[in-house]
Image (cartoon, rainbow over all chains, first blue to last red; front, side, top):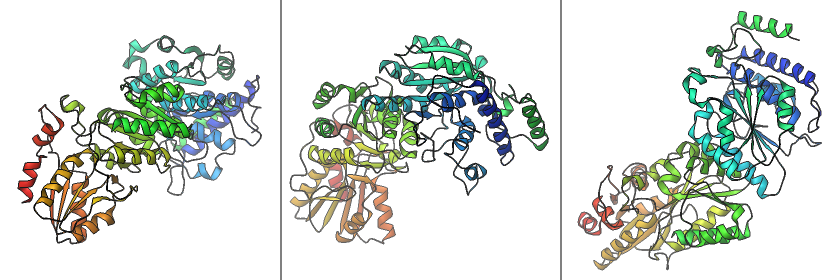
Amino acid sequence: MVATRVGSNRFDAAAARARCLAFRRRILDISQQVSALHIGSAYSCTEIVDCVYYGLMRRNADGSSPDTFLMSKGHGCMIQYVILEDLGVLSRADLDAYCTPEGRLGVHPDYGNPGIAAATGSLGHGLSMVCGMALAEKGRKTDGRIYTVLSDGEVQEGSTWEATMMASSLGLDNIVAFIDNNDFQSLGRTSETHPSFYPVVDKFRAFGWETVEVAGHDSQALFEAVSGATGGKPLMVVAKTTKGKGVSYMENVPIWHYRSPSKEEYRRAIEELEAAR
Amino acid sequence: MRNTFSETLYREATENPDIYVVVADISPAGSMAKFSTQYPERFINVGVAEQSMIGICAGLALKGCQPFAYTIATFSLYRPFEMVRDDLCYQNLPVTVVGMGAGVIYSTLGGTHHTMEDIAIAGALPNMQIVAPCDPAECTEATRWCARQKNGPVYLRIGKAGEPILTKDAEPWRFGRLRYLRRGSDVCILFYGVIGKLAQALAEHLAGQGKSVSLVSAHTVKPLDRDGVIEALQRHRHVIVIEENVPQGGLAPQTKQLAWDVKATCRLDCFTLQDRFIHNYGSHDDLLAAHGLGLDRIVQAVG
């Protein structure tokens, strides 16, 4: 597939839709190699990560970018892997060797692998590292933006709030963060675990961030939420998403946080994705 | 020692625009105030938010900077431990975590402010290096090294204030090498950090008894100069280890292990903090003595 021109003011939503279907399909195929891969978590943020890579991050002629993407919700990195494969940063062989002794890709992103900005997997680490990166860009007077995706469960970590406070106190308006607000964590609904946490967007606004709420599977809306931001503050995009989005039996069913589909489940999922084309 | 650290860091920062210091609400004493005034964009105070302090340092280092995280030792290592492990050690980033006032130096503040097991904890982390200078002059060498190295993370364990100069006649400082402050042939005293004052007092006492004494700063606790320790075990009839760390995980057990490995025949005595929390208050010396690290007790024990 061909990437849309990045760094422009236009975003081809139809192309994004086609890409995201193909990415879900690719993840399904890889799921048959392993017993677990956080498929629901990857489907939840598919449009978000696609929008970051194909719509928001600028790209130099050599394929490099002055911008950075850090997957704070490391367990969702399968979508990042398949996008990096599509961009030619990771190879097909890399993904074929996922979670094997011959390969270098595991269930969480590992620093040192191509295209991976930081090792994550333990929640609540990403946003502080993002702050440090954004600070370094400011210090060098470069205009690199740092993009990140947090899970809604991750926002329960106290360290996330330390970083939230730091980003606004330091005036890091070169940070664009997304919350993959799918309302699920391992043990059930996030809104039932912490009802007082809602509405999420108010909390970040109170901490000095520019905030916007958006439908998290609407690629065009995601793009416009960022490209239309006022600026001058770190930006938090609270994206309402569905865990397991795209495969009906996975949607909002906690077990798909982690497990891989059986052969029969795989066949049904492929049928659904094909029908959606 | 903390002033020496700050002054050295300030000087290094003057030459290297990639040096940042990220502090957690620690008073900007001495040259730290100068740093914050001169380079406000590279002096970051996170407030009481130590996890963020380490994460921000990691992010800076991931972009090629050379950051220092600076606060009281308990709060630079224990509070944000998982950030130290995952963000710094796992990613092997050249960040210096400064543990100021380590050991039981904060002798009136109680156990919440004591780092009795920092060497064991930092030493257990893959990729982590540990440097513990014994006096302000050695702190200058260590800080300069930390500011220029790209190996990976360092835990720089320093004292607070008022440490005497011990290294006036010492050999040059080299990372990863034992440093003889004086050379003898009978007894060798191995130590690191600000407990050097006690080690030196013991050396003088033993010299007064007519013994030929080596006094050795094992400032690089990790990676330990194993060959140097083995040589010390083989060249002296009696080796004494003194350290301000719990009995496990520090210089003492490593020295014992090396002695076993090479079948050393020397006498070996180790003096460490005890494996218990104490609820005593007083001077630093008072607390060390309460742990059994007093000159009289050691003199008695080593005969």
